[in-house]
Amino acid sequence: MSDLGWNPLHGVPSYPAGRYAVLADRIGGILHSRNDILLVQAEAVVALEAAAVSLARPGLRALNIVTSSYGGWFGQWLQRGGASVKDIVAEPGLPIETEVVAKALDAGPHIDVLALVHAESASGSLNPLPEILALARARGVVTVVDAVASVGGHRLDVDDLGIDIAVIGPQKALGGPAGVSALSVSGRAWHLILRDGAPRDSILSLADQKSWVDGGRRGLPGTPAPLEFFALEKALDRIEAEGLENVVARHALAASATRAGLAALGAPAWVPAAKASNLVTAVPVPKALAPAALIAAAGQLGVELTEGVGTAPARLMRLNHTGPRAAFQTVLSNVVAYGAALRQAGHPSDIAAASEAISAAYRS
Image 1: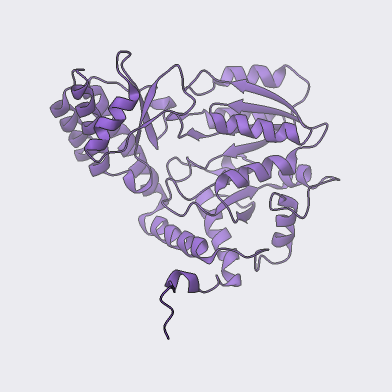
Image 2: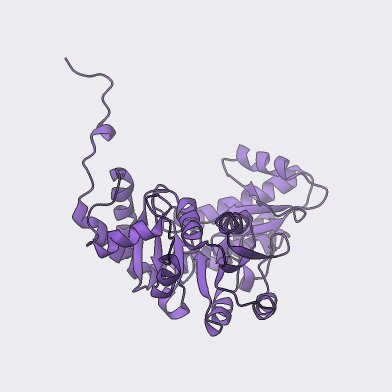
């Protein structure tokens, strides 16, 4: 008798143990990193917490740059492990200023670890990563970069920039699964992580992952979810076929076209292009209008717009052009839907001019 409850997804074969190392090397290629690449069997927030837990000790001094809730969480995780943490909090929805970081680094005492997010999907802002990393390198500070949103959407050269720990997730610009993530870990970072008392026997232990690296990078501990790793392979296949530089350029074009469309619409973007992410464009909502009403009006057209996260009192609306959405059709529908929502709320918007500006950006 056939089992009517059977689903072919339940019978997926195990992911071959010999291919984990290949996956790690392919991710290292995307990151331009010769450091150790670790695979984490969970969404990227777990990899971020693992980095914090593995570094944090009494006596460790950290400078934590907060430009979204993710930065706030990282500081809390460090403090929970006994580290002394100094948070630098940017203005809501805005990137941190390099001068503020330099001043904090020089205020003393010596900082051991500096942590920051590269591109903020919460607000569409972009922190000045090369400048901040140069400050840290000059002072011998180990750096942790949340590059979950930026990888594939912005150029990210881990070795040239000198990033000690880079955390990525494939679910955004890379267009991959959300249930697996990765870290690049330098020798300097390992020196801090592997000191006496390093956390062990935990999914949050990077020291345990070092044993996987040193042991030949075969089967991962526990019971890995094979579908996630097969999906990650397919995502990397697509990235490599398109070419990473082309993927980054596609996101840059989507961001530029979105900004051009919003400007023509009469609703200029929140931050200047040099301070903006290629993944999400944020626009301030006119004071008299309710963000929820604009979201609902766009939703009636089948377009998903979202509010900025943790950006009050800025009142930002986000237009998402990440991964497969970094394309003409999505950029056009995002801006047109926002313009239509503004019109429905009684706010003037030049939808025809916005459409032409987006078309011109893609024709050039």
